[in-house]
Image 1: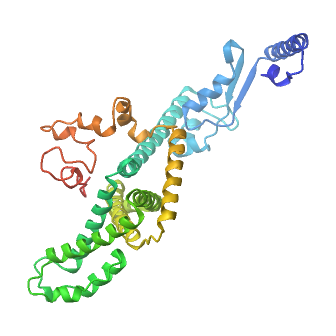
Image 2: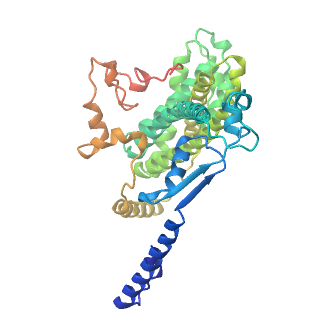
Image 3: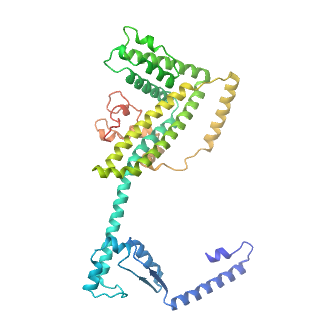
Length: 408
């Protein structure tokens, strides 16, 4: 290393050889001086909590057969001895061993006590890391769901409309369910709140009060009317902007909103993690409490995401002339082709490392379809959330056997 550091580009071969010989002679001379003095002496002021660190320090004093020495100076007041060793150690050392003040601690019994104390510390640290991994796995399970959904959105083309329609339908079902409870009379429905929610989330000013007064009205009919009107407004926007432009714009909205809500959710999980151990004072398992709270936060995040996507798509206005629209489409197409040429995957996602290996032979969807057995529910875990359920019910996997339960 010294030779490479002091060698310059303009030096000739003779000069490089002369420099190399000089440096090697200096190193050999210094090595002889150190060896004659007894080698490297490592002095430790106390024993470390980990035996691995002590062994590394000892190894520094005798590298590759060179002579050396390692000495550790201990005290019964050191943290390792005071916290983890026996409380009666100092008394035993003075009474049974006859240790006096200032005398070296070299008794074999003391070495065994130190090893037991270090073993207890290492076991405690192992349990801390093990417990931390359990908390991290809760977030990692949610991360897999979010990243899988994000990957599907990025790879979606015709299916992107299905995502948007599904989110809008879920929001409509939710607001109708909250304002028009099943089994209640139409006079008991909260038509005013339903009207406000349609304006806030769907940008629709509908005659809800008049519909509620109809004789044959029910919550199913009310839901169908709202969905029909929302679909008509969306189709009109698609007709103005064009299918490809609207899909590209919707994909950008989806990814931006998903990333924003996911980062906010991670921050909420971090805040929850900092104080969850206090639940132990109430005789509750902090890990189980964290799982339950994290699941509730995740469900809230997904619901808020659906509301944000539906609201953004409903309120966006597209006013473009045909000439401007054609120019934008051409420019976007050229940029997409150029980006596709430069695009390459720089790293694989560790969360999906096991799933990404077979992608060389086919797509993710094709690989997964060949992995499950219809008679074995245990092989359905990798089924995409929006694909039909392998049980043959006709429902989507996430609404059937892939539904997330509160005890998961």
